[in-house]
Every structure is written in structure tokens, then in C-alpha cells.
Length: 286
Image (cartoon, rainbow, N blue to C red; front, side):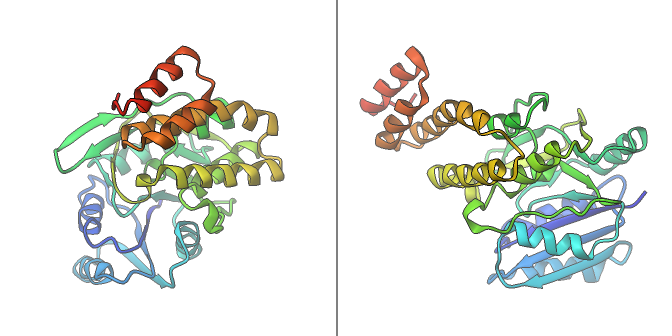
């Protein structure tokens, strides 16, 4: 069984070394490592090539391309990889030492798996803090959007017989993966959860900072999913209140009180939302 690692990167000089070291420190090394440089303007490429020159035990593939976004970068990597399974890893996240060992053992037990995912540690490297993110069973495509159980850095896809392709529309940047998993569920792909918590997901970094923009991208992606018939419009409508509440909480915690109040008003969360909205109006960070 050949398992490859696909790492898209864009101006990741501050984190990419730690990310790559977490792969090279695996108890079972991957067959190949593909790093797609999505038009970086820092020295990310120099750092990565140093690793590749020093280690010839793994097949290294380094792809350079103009900046086109995460979806295009992952697609470019998938085009050149030859592994039976591809494990995604973002350039600011890390793995525990037995991630690939656990992956191999799971896939040998369930060889018909199309998508494997597992829980993550929410990681704050500055303080060393880690907390397991609450995860729930994936029973419906709405779970992908409401509970975020499938994180790219904790996901492996089977390449044999399936052409995985991420949407490259910039208006859904950051949720290309969720759209692809939604499509996979609609197509009845075999999606399984592994219980090991083998990914350290870096918090408060990159795209997660801009909550309103992210929410706009979610809505754009959901519109696409409805248009393709991958999710029912009624389901999207039912999710609106929960999504508004989630946005309100993020805005509230980041002290954007005015925007938080507006989001609480859309959440229809009853007394709880009303009390939190009052706190936001009084500029109380709850």
C-alpha cells in the first residue's frame, strides 16, 4: 500500500519546516511527498527543497505554480501523485508520529474506504495548548457544514478509480474541501471515521481570522451544492439559523460587537441568543 502526502503552501516560511518535520518523523514514512508551491513570495520553496535534497528515502515532488488558491494547488498535486492513497496536510498543521501507521492499519482493515477522516487537536503552539475538537458522526451532508468534522489535514482519499477535483472558484476559498466532501456524500462514496486524534490543527492562523468573509464563502459553496443537487435547498435553509449563531459567537469573541448583534438577530436562538446579544450590545465579551 502506497500512501502519499500532499501539502499545498503559500508563503508558509514560518510554519512549513515544522509541518514537514512532522511527516519525516513518522513511525512509518510515506511513499511520496508532494508539495505544491502556490506562488509563494517568501522563502518557503528554499526551505522545502533543502529537505528534499537531504532525504532520498522518499519520492519528493515539488510543484511550482502561479497563485491560484487552495483548490487549484491540491488539484495540481493530485495530478502528479501516484500513491494508492493521498493524505492531505496543510502547511501550518502537523501530525502525531503514528498518523500514517494508524492510517495504513485502518485502510487494510477497511479497503473499500474512499475517504478516511479523524478528529483533530486544536493547537496553539505559542502556549503549547491542545484541545480535542468535538466531533460528531457524519450522518448527513449538513453535518459537514454545521459541525466541521472533516478537516483536510486529517483526511485521506483513495485515488484508485476516483478523480478527486477541488473547486477553484476564489469565492469559496477555504471551503473547497467541504464542497468536495458534500459531493462525495451525494455520490454515495464510502466515508469512514478513524478514532485516533492524529492531527494538530493550528488555531488563530491564516484564513480563520476573517469570520464574515469565511461565512460568505460558505454560502457561495452551499449555493453551488444546491445547484448541483448535492444538498437540498430546504436543508440549507434549515441550517441558516445555526450558521448565524456560530458566526455571531465568533464575532462576539473577537469583540466585533456590532456585527455580532446583527448575526444574533438572524440566529433565532431564543433566550440564549437574546442574552448573548444583550452582552454584545453592552460590549461584554462572553
